[in-house]
Image (cartoon, rainbow, N blue to C red; front, side, top):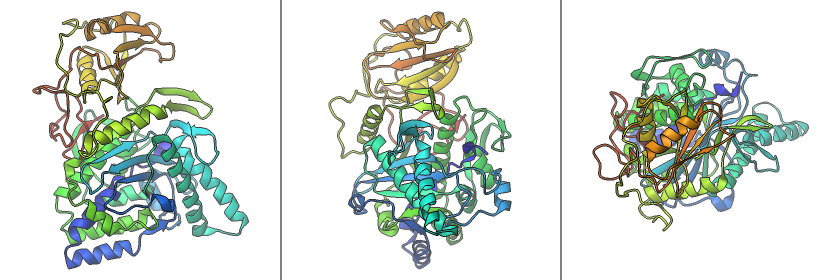
Length: 508
C-alpha cells in the first residue's frame, strides 16, 4: 500500500492544548489535565538549547506518521486497519507524510502554520543525501532499528527507540530548510485521526464538487457535511482525482484542522467533561510529544488564541513535476522558503515589523489591460504564483480565468518579485500572449520547456496592474488574519480566502 494512505492528523495537538488552558480552571478539568499529562508518551528529541519558557516564542513541528503502531509501539488491531482502508501491519511505512510547522509569538496571540509538502526534494540531515522530505524520518529510523536489533532490542521498545531517532532527523531537516529552531515536537499516528474526530462528535467540511475515490475510500457529495472516524480519514488523505494532487490534499488538511479548531473552541467541547475526556483518551493513545514539554504551562500561553487567529499556509514551490532519482518530486528553494516564512510571521505578529523589502499590500489601482478575455484556443491549465505582495490576488485571478474557460491549476504564494511574467509550455504561445495582453501593459509571454504539456504559469510581481487586483467590496488588497468572508453555505465569490479557524472553507 502506498504512502498516499497516510493520515493528515496533527491539528488536534494544538487544539487539545488550548482546551487544557480553558478547562483546567475546574476540579474536573484539573483531573482530566493531570490524567493526560501523566500518561502521554514522550520522546527525547529536542536539543537542550532549543527548549524555551512557555511564554517565549515557540516553533512547533507537528507530524502525521503513516505508521501501523500506536504511541507505545504496539501494532494497531487489524479490525481498525480494515476500517481505515489501511491494509495490514506490513503496509505503509513510517514516513512523515504530514509536516506542519506552527509559529507562536512570545506571549501567545496570532498563530501561523506552514505546511511542507511531503514530496519536497531537500537535503536531509544526518548525511542521508538529497531526497523527499518525508523520508528524513524513515532513513534515520531504519538505521537505528538495524543498530538496536544488533544490540538485542525488540518488540515495542524497538519501535519506540527507532522512532525517536527518526523524529530527531526530521526535526533537524526542517530546521535546515526553514531556518527556524524547533522548540517542540508532536507526532500522531494513523489511527489518531480516526479517534480524535470521533471524540469531538465530527468535523464540518465543505466540498466544491462531489468526489469518489476507491483508493482512500472518499465518497462525498458537494456542499457542507460533517465527517468523523473513517470518513474523516478518507477526507484528508484523498489525493487521486483532485485537480492538484497532493497540494489539494494539503489544502484539505488545512481546512479540516481549521474547522476542527473552530468546533472545539466554539461548540462546548472545552466545558463538556465527557467530550474532553474522550479527546484526552484519544490523544493518550495516538500522540507522542517531546520530553520536557510542560503542556499545562504552555496551554496558559494560548488563552487568547481565538478560533480565527490560526492561519494556515503552504510553503512556496518551484516545480511540482520535478523529476528525481526518488521519482516525481516537488522542487523547492530554501532561500525562497525562508523569506516567505519570515514575511508571513511578520504579517501576523504585531511585535515583528516587516522589513523595508516587504511589498505593500495596499497599492493604488492603475488601469487594467485588455477589457475582455476570449476563451482559450485550446485546452490549457493555468498556475498562478503570487509574488505581488497582495494577499489573495492569485486566488482571485485563478477564479477569474476559470470563468473565462481556463483550467484551474496551482495557486501559491512566493517571495516578493518585481515583474509579472507569463510562462508557457510548447503549443501554448497563442493562449499565453492572449493572457499577457489581458493582464496589462508590459506583461510578457516567455516559452518554458520545463512546463508540462498544456500548462501556463503566471508569476505575479509588484508591477502587476491588471484585473482582480483588489478583493470585491474592498479598497485594499490586504486580508486580515481571521477574515470571516467565507461562509458555510458555499465558496466565496472573490476566490478562496486564507484558511483560518473562523469557519468552514469550501475546497476541492
